Image (tube, rainbow, N blue to C red):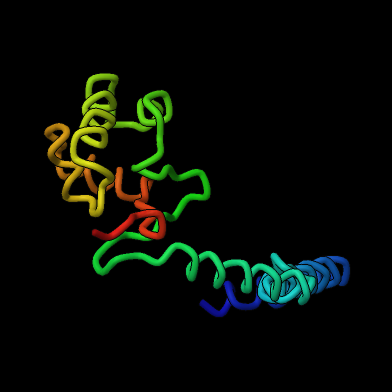
Amino acid sequence: MNKLLNSFTSFTRSERVGLLVLAFLLVILLVVRTTMSLWVHPIQDKAKEERLVRAWEQYKKDHSVAEGEIVPSYPDSLDLNTADSEALVSLKGIGPVTAHNIISRRKEKGPFTNFDQLRETGSFPEAVFTALKTKLFIDTSRLTRN
């Protein structure tokens, strides 16, 4: 054991310098990696960030969501009451027949007021139905109350 310890502590001068340089580089790498999140910020302009927050607040005010509805999480989500057949078919889980059923149901019974009414247009597996809730929304500000 003593021989092994002595062999590790008896480096030449160039080996010691190399180890010190290696240790120094590792420390720099760790420091850069831990502080990188402080250097890179997605929105560096405070005015732009404030405009985005105001726009989001205005959107939430204009598109009030009924209790229990899911707010669309994608900017390209579709309004269930205004989407045409082509747009509906582009969604995974809706084929041409279901898209036709959705549009026919809108014409016959009026606009959708909640997502459970979507089940009337076809038999969706629960996973597909949940996924569609993230791709579709119901704009309740356009609904007229009788």
